[in-house]
Length: 409
Image 1 (cartoon, rainbow, N blue to C red):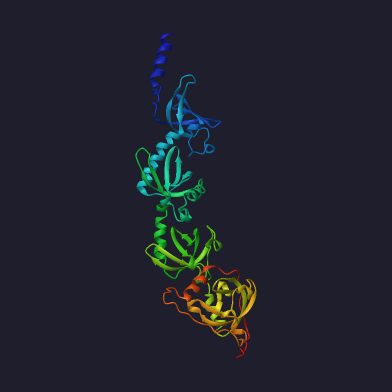
Image 2 (image 1 turned 120 degrees about the horizontal axis):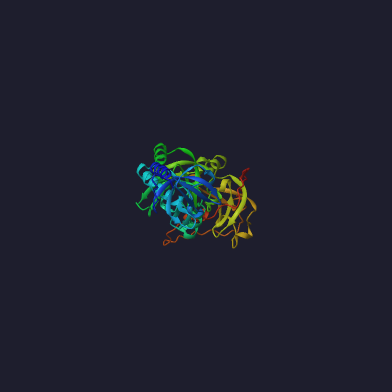
């Protein structure tokens, strides 16, 4: 090498940038050279070439959105002397960014979107480039909360597993420095909307909400984070033994607000319908004769299926003037019969009927004896009320008012 060549080499070396070899664990910036088979080749400062293999991509980056020439931040994991490449990780560089974002969100209470990847009986698990987060069951909104009969752990888990893959809007309510305990809350994300909705809601309002849960004692419905209960007694004017026959989870229902006590919201569906007892009282009265089918038979007597689930009782003593050993000898379930109204109390939801009042009384008919047991705590009337409420009517057929018939004395 001549002196002139040496001088030129020294000049070029003097003007060239300093070669800085990246350290393991350092996050550096580079430029994508090529993407092939889910591996990324990266140009680092025009001095080194690095490789991000597929398992180091992470789950927060859409590979299809990346292209040659794009800037990229990566973490140095080491080098491969044989291949002459730096070994890089996009996932771990993003973990650092994500952890910083989570801390920022915790401070600002900003709403973010996460997607659960796994579930257990305590809640939903979230994975952000390897950072593990958790949405506890207690932090789910009413729309996603597992309303399960008897708090059955198996059914709770089934419900939560059905939420995997669904995007959730949440707030960060806990994050430690190492990212080892990250807690998200869906409830906190809608707190502002919930407060506004609660302030505007008042008793008597008629609203359309979404069914969020169905249990044996009623329907849960929700809107903007508020959740109210339509008790089983407020679903329908007739007897309801299975609320799931009246609604399905996710369907919209109109309800009336009938009670507001702190955050306890009582709702009603039946009060948006006409009370069938009021309607019936406008058509019939004591002394009228009606025609309707027998819906069931019990030890107290036979029940007639009237309007909208109303059941009228033909007491055992009103079946016949003669001795009644088996009610089925006189009437059958499904058979349409005529009966006379002998007691009608719409306010108490009671209607007493009689077959024998339409029959001629035999001259030798036995006299009815009434025996009062002083030790009996529950009245016969209360027992009958309980029996009336016991089961729903078999079908709904409107009673037909007949011309009053003259009783022969």
